[in-house]
Image (cartoon, rainbow, N blue to C red; front, side, top):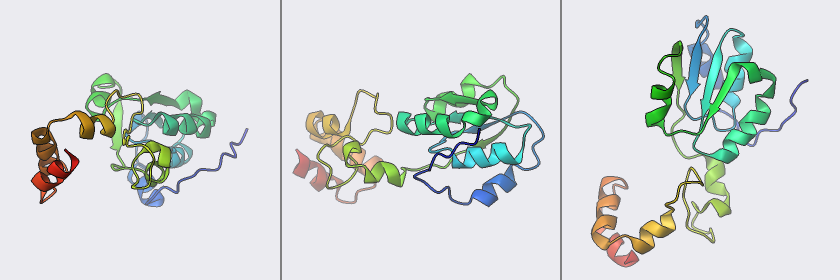
Length: 168
């Protein structure tokens, strides 16, 4: 049965990604950021001998991808793990490649309930909505020194001290 699920996302460099994995004859490819499953679907369609380990921190994306990739269910394993754990969990599998489309999805940024946008009513910013710590707790509960460190180290904010003091 063909899945007529309309994807809210168009995968970038799709032909190039499929081409990178075209000569792999068997084994598993890890899609570390499966998102809405476009790259994984194309790889599975182009090579019937490949299996995929489809990972994402966003449960909404995983649920969509499970429906999208239903026709390949015997060739796909889904995970909701941090990057640091996915390879370790499958290190004894015949891994042949890794695909990682790193970054925040525009779909996550556009959804006001996710709390990434300036006009969101909530301040959340979690990729994994089951994580206990949201941006709201960080900006409201962290001491100003910790905020300064975060802005400087991870945000590369030039005026990190000023930004932290405004929040405090």
